[in-house]
Length: 131
Image (cartoon, rainbow, N blue to C red):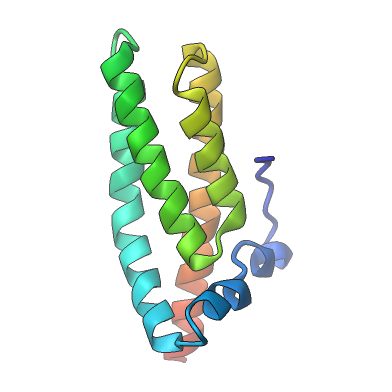
């Protein structure tokens, strides 16, 4: 399920860092590098997803692009433990095949909110590490 409502006191629930680190055999340095890549690449991927959904006619080529971009976001989100964002990306990916444009738009908006929460979490982690 993809439902995004994040309050500042819930920021710790945005990313399951421990789960992601477990997959990386505890390699914190690698995890930090993955966060940097996630933070720089997913906004671009989300913009491409949005562009594919904002075409005048949501034809099969646009739907395929939406699936591809949302799949990339899902994979990247899972790699850092951003499970809500991954669930939202999966919802877009599966809906892109045949859902009406308004459904895809709503699911994409939820994904955008989930990604914003992840970016805030990453930025917060960076500030804490720099302090």
